[in-house]
Image (tube, rainbow, N blue to C red):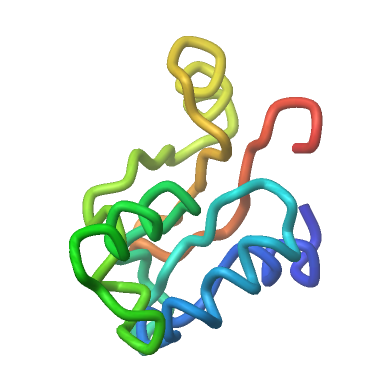
Amino acid sequence: MDNRELERFIGSKNLSVSEAMQRIDNNACGILFLTDEQGKLVGCVTDGDVRRYLLAGGEMNGTAFDAANKSPKVAHSLEEAKHLYHHKNFIVIPIEDECGVVVDLYAGELG
């Protein structure tokens, strides 16, 4: 996946829930990976995570990180990503480097 495509799936952990939902809608896969200031993966948020967050009293102007899964499944190689994707019920598998930075994504037929 090229960098421009990858950017559609990655956002700052400081995004508002509303901004995250817009990004999730735009990438059409239902997920956004959240990173810290150094670009390290710190969580992921799906439309379902947002729904549960709002039902629990969260607000649209809260941070996406508040609604996020802070322990997302990750891979460190394409082969590992394919294995996770095809043996579990995942939407997209992030592939991160040794520093925890997302360098690629595997989305089955899309990746």
